Image (tube, rainbow, N blue to C red; front, top):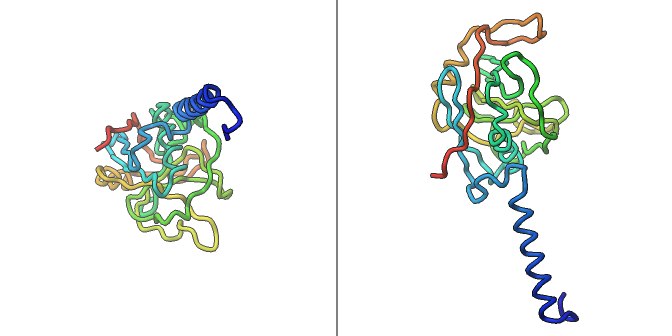
Length: 205
């Protein structure tokens, strides 16, 4: 590549390219810059019903895990509600504030549901619409082994981690009273709001 260039110019170009690559990596804002050498980052979710710790799997779901970390890093999950709870199925949140107003979203992400991770009990996965690649910020916890959410002939729902602490908190959440909210037009809304107060990336183990 540098055979026809003088040695000083070649060294300068090599230094410039290397430095530019390092700066570009540091300036990324897609979540990959958060603990970049940690393949299993942990996030503490502090809720009004107790604390939950999740371990994300960057080896199987790098896009999804990094996307989640990006929202955590921006403190965008703070004071959001768990707006949908279906006993024996899911506890869902991350998309709305305590007044049920939709929170700002980053672009939609690619569906990594074919990564081998299953929608098993206490796993965390991305919610989406019928468009398989429409997930952005809403997530859910599986409250059962939900095989119907795994990929098969069609796209599934991307799992990107598991709960390591606080499963009893999720169990309590899944038991709260819910109702049909006529104003919102939604079913399975908790009568008493459950808030995600704060989300924090924990130090590596």
